[in-house]
Every structure is written in structure tokens, then in C-alpha cells.
Image (cartoon, rainbow, N blue to C red; front, side, top):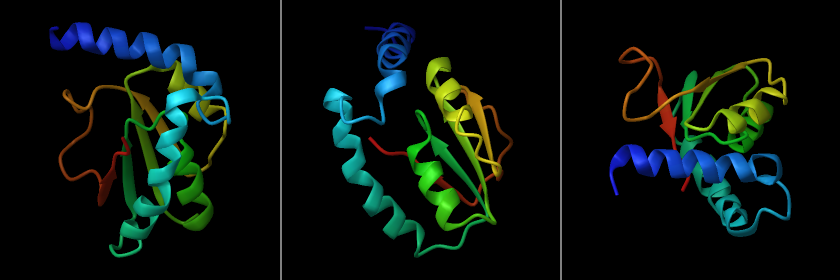
Length: 119
């Protein structure tokens, strides 16, 4: 399968699950939640002001981080527009959400102090 075909399949799949991704009915995607404590623990070891969540989905990590560190800025990047729509509905004041592709990074070099990606 070619890269662009895989991306289209990913967008299709994550569009279907976007509205329930953070629920207890997210199926296989519920396993993503197990990574959150480990990511938080690692971030506590490094100072950061501007963080990118690559593949942010509906922004569960940014939600957690924004509560814990409200003075910092967060950017969520996801390939799936429906996931970004769900993230924006949270109205996180110190967060920006962008539909985009990690292979074609839509940001300048050195835009972030930290980048996270779960799963």
C-alpha cells in the first residue's frame, strides 16, 4: 500500500471514531489511554513552554497538560479534520489545533520545546 493510500484509510477510520474516541466505547482506541501517565511523567523531567502533540486526536493529552500547566502553549496536529473539530470543541484557551501531516510538517523549525506522540 502506498503512503497516500494509507493516509486516506487513516482519515476514514479516525473520522468514524472521532466522536467517541475519548469515551469508554472507543474499542481498540481505549488502549491509548494507558500511555498518558507515562507521557506526563516524561514531560515532568524536561522544561517546556511550547508543546506539539503530533497526532493529537481530540486532544486528550493537551486537555490534561493544559490543566496541569495552564501557563504554557499547546499545538495539536492531526491528519483527520474530524479529530481537530472535536479538539476545538474543548475551547482550550492556550491551545491551537491544526489539520496537518507529520511528514509534511506545517511549522517552522524550532517552533516547539517538546513534541509528544502517543501510539
